Image (cartoon, rainbow, N blue to C red; front, side):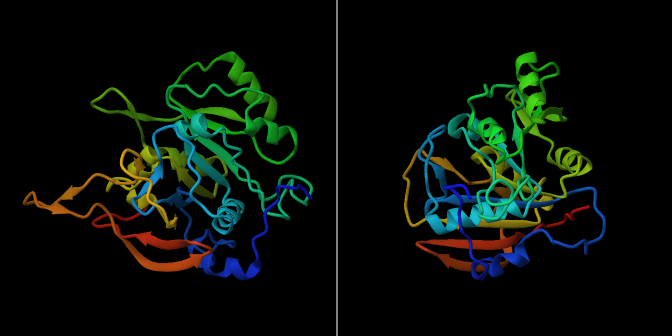
Length: 280
C-alpha cells in the first residue's frame, strides 16, 4: 500500500451517507449528475490568504474525509486558478481504492478542470500526470473555450487518456468567461459522470451559489477550520439578492443542516434552499 494512503474509518463515514450520491439507482432519471459542492473555509469565509496562495485549512481528519468524498464521486471539478496555484493531484488516497491497495483505478474520480482561455501550462512534471504514470489517478478533462488548443497539450492529454472538451461559455460585461453550468453538467453526465464533486476555487463556488445555478446543487459539505485568515483573502460570498422592492435579501441558505465535529474542525452538511426554481 502507498505510504501516503489515508485511513477513514467506517464509523466516520455514516454521518456523510445522507449527503452523498446514492450507491444504487433510486432517483428518477435526470440529464444532470448528482452534484456536491464542497470546500474548506476559515471562520471569516476565506478559502486562501490571497489569490494564488496555497493555504492549508483542513486538519488531518477532515482531509481524509475529503478524499473519501472523492471516492464516492465520478468526477472532481476545480477551476484553473486552483490548478495553477496548487499543482493538485486530484485523486483519492483512501486506503483500498484503486492505486492505494487495490489494482486498477476503481474509486478514482475523473479530474475536470475549467480553463476557458487555456492558461494552465501543465506538463509531464505536473503532479496530476505523475500520478497517472504511477497508476494512482486519472488524466483530466479540461473544459475550455479555446477552439484549437496547443498540439503539445493535446498530445499529453491523449497519452494519458484525458481530453479537451469545449463547452458553451457566457461572455460577461467585463469580457471574461462565465460557465454555463447547466450545459456543462449535462455534458459531463452524457459522458458518463453520474456524480460530480465541485471543490473550488472561490470564483467557481460563488458562481454556483448564484440564484441561477443553485438549483443544480444536490448537496453542500463545508469544512470550517478554527482560524481567521484576515482581510484580503479569497472569500466565499455570493452576490446579494434583492426583492421586488429593492430590499436586500440573503444570498443563499441551507436546509436539512447537520453539524459534525471532526478533530478541531467542524463539518457542515446541507442542501441549498432554492426559491422559485427546481432542478430539472
